[in-house]
Each structure stands twice: as structure tokens, then as C-alpha cells.
Image 1 (cartoon, chains in turn red, yellow):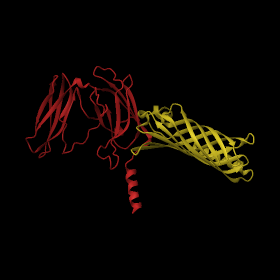
Image 2: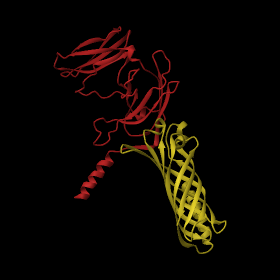
Image 3: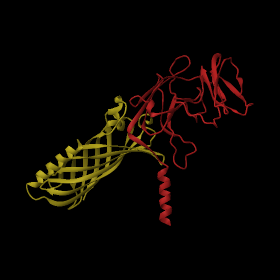
Image 4: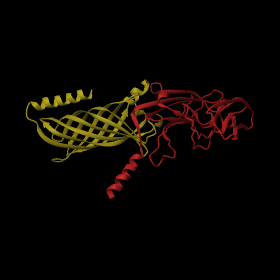
Amino acid sequence: MKKTILFFILLLISSCEIPYDGEKRHVVNVRVLNSDGNPITNQYVEVNSHNSRGWFDSYSNLDLITYGKTNNQGELTLIFPSSDTTFNVNFGNYYDNNVIYLRTSLDNLRLDNFDNFKIDLNPIILYKLEELTTLTIDLVHSAPQTILRNIKVEGYTSYDPFYFNPIPIEESYYPQTEFKIVKNKNFVLTYIVKDLNTSIESTYTVSLTVANDPISYTINY
Amino acid sequence: MRNYLVLIIVFIGTSIFAQSQPKWESQFRFEFIRPIAFGNNSISKSHDNKSGFGFNWSLIEYEKFRLGFGSSFITFGVIDKSKAGNFDRTNYNTISGVLSYDYKINDKFILVPYISIGGVTLKQRATDIRNSTQDGTEYKIGLHTDYKLGKSFVIYSKVSYAYSKLNITTAPEYEKFFGQAQQIQIAIGLKL
């Protein structure tokens, strides 16, 4: 009995470790600029893999595999051992309370996005919090046979996350309804409504202008 | 390459020993190692030098030559996580074949030059969270200075140069950075 318990404890402990391939190393080059085009020095950047730490960490499903800070040219090279999964690149530390720039995330980076084990993210523009305002989408679901498939905001926007590769949209998809948007700019809001009876998807595009104050927009579907 | 050098060591060893009868003569060394990594590589630039230990077991003796094997376990601390990854330490573990030669200076001192070749494994770890493994080949040349304290009790110091060629696939500009390591290793130990 003791041996059985010990075996399962060892199995549990060993399953908590995330293995990486140290014989393959991937390189992420970043250059981070502000909205004036000047380099941001000392900007924290990290790469996470979508690995869980076994039973204990299945909740977060992210593993911080490398991090660093940009030099005075706003440049940073991050290198990490390979893993057969996807990655995200975060600009900004989630635990930093003295945030100047909006924390931005580039998600769903796959190994096939790397060219010869290297990818250049150049440049990444970060906006100060004071440069941004909020767009809130109010959803009014009045037709039961329809679902909202996707909401995208294109233009001078900064939102979390941006996906390298599109992620599959499930029927249970709940769209992002709050976006950080640069003040005094025009932008385009796009959303898709799917009719479940006919399976027809209709794409809607709206051009909007934002001033200094937060705005809201209502989608009826 | 590793196979060729193993063959060379075995060939030299057997050539020497073939001239007359070698004898089984067990000699054991245990040592504490202080590595000094250098060069433009990950071990040198992204780690600090910590310490380790090793042992060497000579099994066959012919006149002044000895043939045996050794192993070492050295830890390097990760200081640049942007290059080495989010690990706490890198364990540098080796197991090698060793050919040495005893050059007696006087009744107290013996100089023991040696060469070795074997496998190296770099195991990166962050406590109970993540790990990575990288294998390669280590070539080493060095010199023991043995000092006889008693009839069968010897202390020694050792200086070695170790070059490791590591398996790596990465962006071309980082192949050398992750594909090799160089160290001077200083050790003190006991010979039994």
C-alpha cells in the first residue's frame, strides 16, 4: 500500500514538470516604440508557452519561459527552448502596479510562424494609458436564431490580445466587448452575425470616430 | 567525432597495454570542482559559475598509464533569463573515459596529465516547474598534482580545460552560442 501511494506521489510530482527541448532554441526579436516613434527603454517583455503544469496548474495553462527588458534602442532578443505548443508574447508585466503603457499581448504564436527558428516583431507600438479611451460594446440579443460570431476593432487600437493566428470560434463564443482605443482617431468596428437556421453569416462594418471620452456602441442581433 | 576519439583512446590504451600484461589496479579520486566558463557561449554569458563535484575511477594500469572512467556534476546559475530561458540553474553532467599518465617528481609529488572524452548533458531546471535537456560531447585535457600524505592517502589539485560540443538547432547566428561551451576547471580532491 505504501509503495502504491509513493508511486502515485512520484507520478504526480513528475507530471507537474513541463519538459522543453533544450536542443532547439527559438528566437524572438522585438523592438518597442511609443506612439511618437521613439524607442521605449526598459520595457518588460515576456514569452509564455501554453503548457499546463499538470494537475496543479491546469487553471492558468501558461508557463513563463523567458523574459527581459528592452535596451535604450527599445530592442530585446528573447530565446527559449522549444516546446510543441503555442506561445504568447506579452508587453508589460501583469503584476506591475506602475504601468505607463497598456499591457499588450500577441497570442497564439505557433512554431511554424518562425522563419529558421527566428521571428522579428518590429516594431511593436505601445500606447500610454493616458492616450487611450474605452469603447464598450453593448450587446442586444433580440433574435434567438442568431449568434454573434466575432467582434474586431481595426485601426488605431490597442487591445488584449492580438492573435498571430486566428483561433477557432466556437458556438459558445462570448465576444470581447471592451476595447482600448487611441483618442481622437477613426477606427472600424466589424462583427459577424450567424443565423443558426440557415447557417448564413453576415458581416457588418461600422466606421466610428472617437474623441477624448469613452464611447459605447450597441449591436443588435 | 566522439566515436573516433573513443576509438583513439581505446587504441592508445590497448596499444600501450598490449606490450605486456596490464593489471587491474583500482584507484579512486573524488574532487570538488570550481568551473570558470569563458567564451561567447550561453554557459559563459548567461550563467554564473557555481561549483560541483566529480569522481574518477582508474581500473587498469600498465606501468605509468591508467585507464578508467570519470563523472562530474557541476551547477551553473542562470543570470540572463532572456537568453537561457526562465530557469534557475543549469546542471552540467558528464561521464567520460579517461586515460592518464603518472609522472613521479619525487616521493611526495606526482604529476598526472590526462585526457578524457565522453558525453555531457545540460539539464536546465526551475524548481519543480520546468526543465530542458541538451546533450553533447565533452573533450577534456588536464593535469593532476598529487601530494602524498601517507602510505595510501593522497590529496591533489587539478587544472583542466574542457570543451563541449552541444547538439543544437536554432537561428544560424546563435548556433555557436548554444552549440558549445568552454571551461577551465579547478579542483581539489582525495585519491584513495
